[in-house]
Image 1 (cartoon, rainbow, N blue to C red):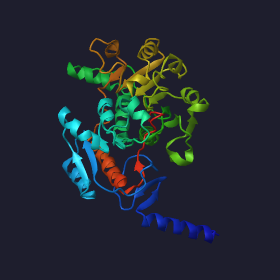
Image 2 (image 1 turned 60 degrees about the vertical axis):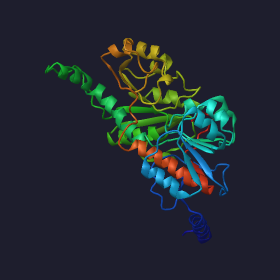
Image 3 (image 1 turned 60 degrees about the horizontal axis):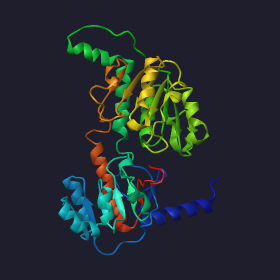
Image 4 (image 1 turned 135 degrees about the vertical axis):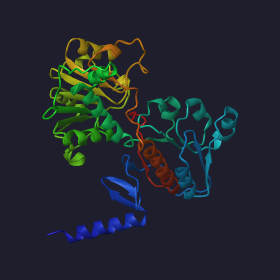
Length: 373
């Protein structure tokens, strides 16, 4: 029998949330009636009161006309500034309160009234310069979750190129040559290890489970299988040896970690040598999280059966770099996040956050500037 007093309190709580324009959904607070579909959790910000006076936003990145109109419809006190010349920036930056897209350190120093910057990408390493980090009054948000579906599909595109010999077959096609490949692998019952279990890692895991792969994952944050659902078989904390538990099982190792001081160069020889023989390595996060020299050593010594890289270090990969020559390496040009939907999803996060910022509501996808993601 249900506890009626608890049930009544819950109903009262939900009614109060609805009256304030908020609903609880999957651990996140989203606006009632919102069509918002992608992004991370919303958390409380310091901006908790309905604002007074104009809100000036600098669009340093382009915004689709219909979404721009949605921003303007929130309030006639929202002023969108598009000018980008140095002389023009000098005149408007001191009054700008929010920025959509990249702002460099020199410009941020001139923007003394800045309170919120939104990154069009999920990775924010280019934003984390001293001026941004040290100004506590500035909230940084990003496009976490917006590129996950496209990146997850690209992950399997890279993997299929290796396991099904598609790279070799494509080369044969350019010379009109009918020839098979020596090795083709069926992935059923293999184990995929995903390092970094945020929005991208989870999208990859969902697809992996549909393909009958065992999925193990590790993250630096304290996650539980209760919050991640049935998309992962085993979930480990990287703060307590979780990475090694993933490595000892992973026939396919996927990097989905952000680039931070802690993750730079983390995929090195010590990592690769702990993998089972003939494992595959896929990197769709950032090139600098991989030690390229150690990756090539693992390939040269036969520790890895192959590598699929959408990102590299250095990037762009120079034309004379040795990685281009490996028959068991497939390289794409940092394009995994692109699709007909991903850019629009990212813009919609910004539009929703403008609405929230203007009305003093918690913002979606806040970045921990100290942690770097």
